[in-house]
Amino acid sequence: MDFTIRAANLEDCKDIARMTLELAEYEKVSEHVKVTQKDLEQDGFCKNPFFHGIVAEVPDQHRTKDGHVKIGFALYFYSYSSWKGRSVYMEDLYVMAEFRGKGIGKALMSKVAQLGMAAGCNQLNFTVLDWNKASMDFYMSQGCFDVTANFGYHYMKCEGEALERLAQP
Amino acid sequence: MKFKIRTAKQEDCKEISRMIMDLAVYEKMPEQVKISHRELERDGFCHNPFFECLVAEVPEEHKSSQGHTTVGYALYFYTYSTWKGPSVFIEDLYVMPEYRGKGIGSSLMAKVAQVGKEKQCVRLQLSVLDWNTPSLDFYVRKGAQDLTASEGWHALRFDGEALDKLAAEAPKD
Image (tube, rainbow over all chains, first blue to last red; front, side, top):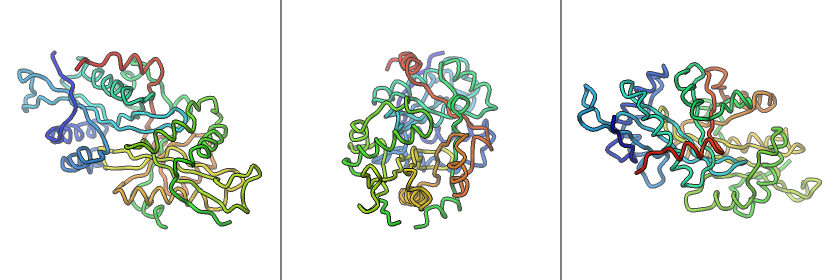
């Protein structure tokens, strides 16, 4: 199936918001999603954007039954390793269910890697849930390694009241 | 002991680099450190910096046995959660051993949280090695939750040849 990968623009935020919710449902955490289309527009397309996006599109003849042609996306931003330097972090990688198995996810991830390397990055980092075998198998087949399993790194977060308390002067 | 937390300047990068190596030694992976103060100077102080940094300083009379007055740092950057919005990630938090237990680590972490809040961040994240009990305990006391333990999140990475190969397979524009 023909598809194109291109940089996301402001108008894509509606579809990115839709697919973000689909991804959250897949990850069984849709009630946690607070970000809206408007937030994505503000945060991704301001003077110093918090993230960058790429979108996968199919030709009109392959549109979904709901009429969507934007059928996958990857959202990423630049980060830093104090050991290795510039890095790129892939926050989301998603392809709508009926378009999987056609190389679209791989193309999106490769594009993030290419863009990151062009910016001088030498690492591509992301996270995956341990029960998400389909994704884990996909990523491993592409040659990544599991930093948590191999080195024992745990991800921690502080939010809500705990963050308020922490930020007290 | 009196100490000051301030925003790092480009001139601090040599000291930050020294402490990055100390932290890597503590984490038992000094051979993993590939960048020097030069990369920090370039990447932290350019037009769109890749990170921000705070340093902790003590007065001259409390300098270390090697003459250092810069005794701790926090290196962080902004990230984005498509669920929750802007976040701040603490890449490194470090205080030299002889200056621990004096509130310096807490102050560095609190300052990052404050800076993050000013930028509308709703979350602060970091990673810690599972065997590093003193640090794990410190973060949990501060209200952090372990997402790997509670939800099963794993950090994955592409680097070296695997990254080169992946990038080479990107569709042409």
